Image 1 (cartoon, helix red, strand yellow):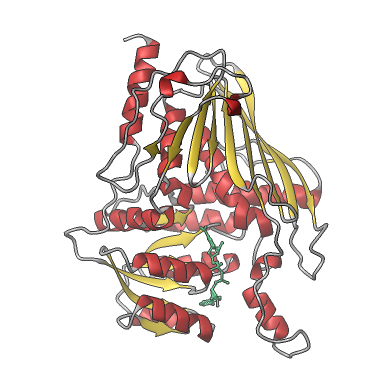
Image 2: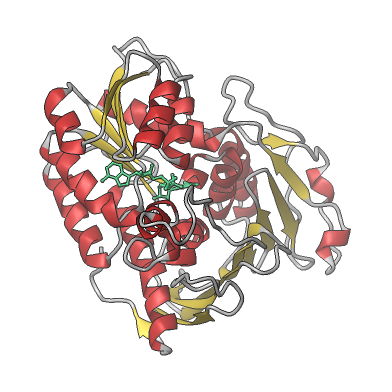
Length: 421
Ligand SMILES: NC(=O)c1ccc[n+]([C@@H]2O[C@H](COP(=O)([O-])OP(=O)(O)OC[C@H]3O[C@@H](n4cnc5c(N)ncnc54)[C@H](O)[C@@H]3O)[C@@H](O)[C@H]2O)c1
């Protein structure tokens, strides 16, 4: 088999082999799950869990009564409701805790869950500081905790297919990734009292925690974590250094976090001949213009992948060998397979203005937020610590976004610490 045949073969293999084996049921008893933080995300996760037979929601916790009520209603009458987390952990027989509280509480909630012998699904970003993330990784390893970070692109059929394509060498050497999440909104949640009310500040900080440094790290942890996880995952590498700029230039409403960030990460790499080169990843997040939305553009010497949660496009470089994929492939057995909609993948465009040509297209109907939960429950049932986003990847992701923020704040290039993982 020559190299091209090999690549063709492995690409077809990848096409069939990247889907998560997802089933919402199993013959094992359902996992007894508790959810802490029943705000926007926690309630969404509860609704998804309610559709998964592998999960039994035994308890929910939120220290803000209106949110606890909403989360309790979504979970159903079998779920006990708690205002205090420590009381929930003490009182209930819980196998796995889903942590969906504001970022500054992730470490402590995960630590307590692990101390109670529970497995953990922790929403992104894993921690509010690199030090916390390192300590949490140690704790999870020492306790053999099944730990998964809620970076749901890891469960997305398109991203899994794209990852398989990168691994087969279809893109060649990746030197550039351009990624962004652009929005045009104030990111605010309504506060139920007026500014002059004595409770306003408490409620503002509780509901709009994203906008204040003590609770959040702003755009980098709330949005950037997703794209920069894709970059680290696709490159299978740790960044070497970052330069960045950002500030608060539009939403001057008392918030502390930046409303625009621009970062360039450098990854020092070696090719198969030992020659060194630097790959670069750019990331921007702005809140004053939504053009381009959220996507990642992964650029290799042989081709480009443009990824969003709903569609994926592959464009061959004009001077690269044709990619002889054999028409449409679709895995009907799992709702989580990427659906290939352009059967004529043999006729990929050679046009340097590739977007005018015919790309190889992928789409997916599955819901990656739900699929990541099924994947986690599967690992819990099988005692598999190699989840689709393990604690080490959570640590790397935390460091990537936080060191980016540090570069913005300190207005200087920052090197990533050696031996981070
Ligand atoms: N993966 C994704 O796409 C995604 C999307 C949205 C949010 N998230 C993440 O989910 C987490 C929660 O975000 P959100 O938007 O749901 O925020 P939210 O403010 O809507 O919900 C957080 C909840 O935690 C509760 N809480 C705060 N302190 C608590 C305590 N001591 N004990 C119990 N409950 C407490 C709050 O009352 C609130 O109900 C964040 O880490 C966020 O980054 C992830």
